[in-house]
Image (cartoon, rainbow, N blue to C red; front, side, top):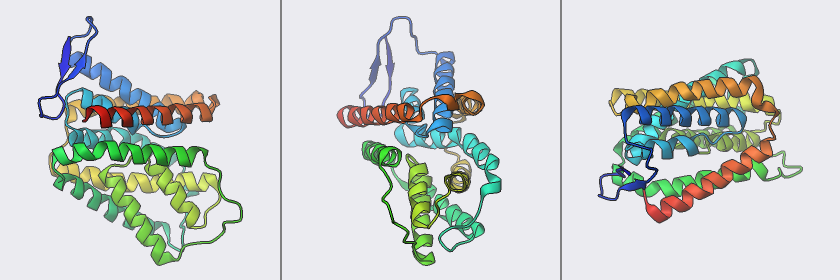
Length: 272
């Protein structure tokens, strides 16, 4: 029986298969396949952090360090997707793309700093609420029908403030960030889903880049755990982009919502 430490509060996680022993090579395989799964999931529908975060916590990281490693591991797929859709990039909400990118840089940096200033134990208490919020956001963005006739646009100042808040959340946690961005871009007046997805991924990549830079400078990245997951996410994203788009996205999104709901219940019941 292998015991996985939680966050230093003497509440170990129990994992009981007799064939499983806690060895570094086992951790590497688990993290690689979790990254692989998350890469496929992100390429198809999103919600990859619902896989990477618990896998990293299971490997022995505290919740805050796991969130940092998860952010780094999923970043390459965001860059790849944003690069593929670079020709679709345009401004929104009365703001140029460069302005939106600058706002996202600043917000992502602030979110990362807030995360670094948050004590690990306090962040562990926040995780169930953050996962709950991300799950609700994901479910709403996946299955709620847009309201007809809603053509109102936000003023550029309001759009800038909203983007800054979203980028701050993205640098701090990031779960459900894609759906937050799509909702915001709709309020900004965009309707072309291809243009929206391209701009969404580019801005998420920008805010994540500044967050990662802050984490690297602060020397808080656990590269041993992050690297195999990063490799897996790249492989998974590439495979999904090549042929898995034939799958019914409603089924995939439904599975992600169930997964998020299950993690929410577990984290509230067991703690992080």
